[in-house]
Amino acid sequence: MVVKNRGRLIFLAGVLVMLVVGWFGFPRMLYQKTNQPIQFSHRVHTGDKAGLTCEDCHSFQADGRFNGIPSISKCGGCHVGLLGNSPDEKVLVEKYVATNTEIPWLVYSRQPENAYFSHVQHVRLAKIQCERCHGPHGAGDTLRPYESDRLTSYSRDIWGHSLSRIHSEVWDGKKMDNCASCHEQRGVSNSCLLCHK
Image (tube, rainbow, N blue to C red; front, side):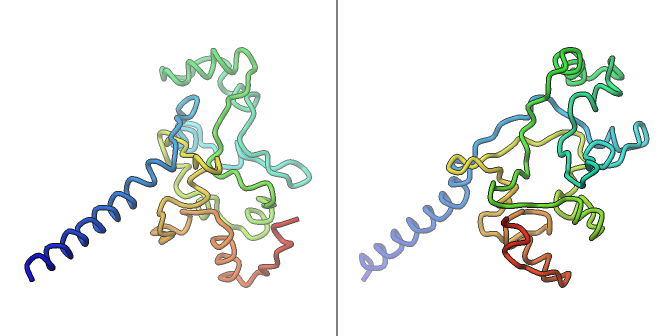
């Protein structure tokens, strides 16, 4: 009887250890962290000092296409010389602005090639705030490391930070079911051809 229960306890302990290792170890093995080329403070740029809005840097073209991350010429408009004493600003000015070299930013929310997403429809027509999908990204003093899936090369921001897909924040995840859920809440069509063209 004691031997039989001992075997069960060892088995259950083994299962528990493997669950813990899988739950906490698997994400560390699956995702590779890479720091952005330089640090950037959204808070400094959107706060009282500079007073910029999201659209001042992440703007739309005349035809409604989204420019995404601003070009170095946009940064160079203000950063011709040093405005502060940050080592990252020094790198920005000397390495990128002075040489007119684009910064090789790693894009947290790059969507798959087979998905079409119109920022102008969501921001201007539906009046959805940037934070709804991107979280409080615009209030940060630093950029977090970019985490890419070693198998697919996509950012962890697409899947979301919880492997269980149980999210504590509405903006944590940019997979199809996140978009479909938002469309359903707003009474918007979920036709496949809206996003897959």
